[in-house]
Length: 125
Length: 500
Image (cartoon, rainbow over all chains, first blue to last red; front, top):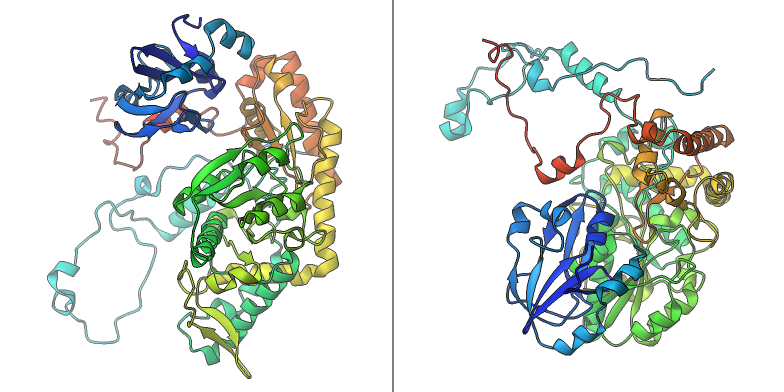
């Protein structure tokens, strides 16, 4: 269920690290808990973000929830698909519905993130 | 007799636009008794139009029936219990309406000279004095038009005070059990938000707070009792921690219905707070209110109040506009005056003993519901409940039924739903606030309905998932409504065309 090549946070974000770029999304568990997602608010490309601080928010029919940045860096790219098709976050959270790509400025932070097995144990699935 | 049956009158009703037929009128003007004037000449061509496109044309009885029928679709506090947690949907006593409709108040005009407005001004003065006493603060402004507006006013005043001391600071601390409007207020006032996680008892973690407070923190925004309906037992210690670092404490007073006449925020160290007259002081929520969000402050913040301020001259009330440190006006004129008159009527009709009694009844009612339902619904916290009780849907979720589904089923039992999925820190929250309005008969009917629904979930969860059955429409498509909202009505092609 939870891909081995991703790393995970306690706040239910996932990260894919490739070189100095980190792709960030929310986990399948997060999308299930949120329910039908109707809006995604993301930072602008070029914004700097800090590990543990708010990166954006997702709105479902139930509530608006903050997304926390797993890592520190600069936003290199945001997923434009989500502004017109927020439902993709429910359909393909670990794939096409990634949120942002970060240029990492402190790659060592990635050592704090969970592996798939640990995350799965953490959410009790 | 079944205590709740369907409403006897429940007709479908098209929009007024769809009822329109050309030439119908709901008015008759008297014969012109002055020479007719050419509107184009008098006003200029650009200000005159022949017709308003799409304006509905109906007769008087059609207009009356339209709105009367729509009114039968409502659920209101005048129908029955309205347990919407955090909203304090208490009864709006009729004496309030009688007072607000007195000719001298209903027909007062804000541009009336002060000499002719002394009665209205003394009502404002009396309400300011009453709220000052109830909150234990030093002064009150009645200008803000709603709770969140009061929050913004209060935080802008904190910013102005800190600026006058040389540094507005950067951050506001907000517990995760605060009202959802608090972070929005912080951000509107130009502050960054830092979230504080609650401890296992649903209260602010004092050690985590102490670690988070530094010279960057302008204030803590705390809701007390918080959205879990729990009183922050360390509130005095909390205010000391903030004050020691030169920061202030803002209290969201939306849950003041649990405190009035029992304890006063001014006495437990709060610097600024707002009240919701449309919650605690029984003014209407319905029909748009309007609301009213007075802000109460300690002495050091008084110079920053929005203006004008009431002032007593030798023998009259006057408006004082000479307020050099004021944050400026936040509302036209003097706030929602009709609402202020209603709130003062409520306070004076109760008196101090009556207000205290209302608070105790509100808390007693919440505890009564908690004690009667805690075998059927999961209680996520063991801390004592104040004016509202928060359950979770944990037991029912095992059968696939969530808080939103239970709420829909409650409609079939003739009650307005409780607050669903809030506060967010409780998974699948059912937030129930009965207020002091309800007597034992209505509370028992509500409790019986909730117990019956809990049994239904065990016996036939599929049935509960499809509720409500007694309403004009059942489940609406919330997802499409949010993703692809239709924001205005457009004429439909005439019926029959498609069949041709």
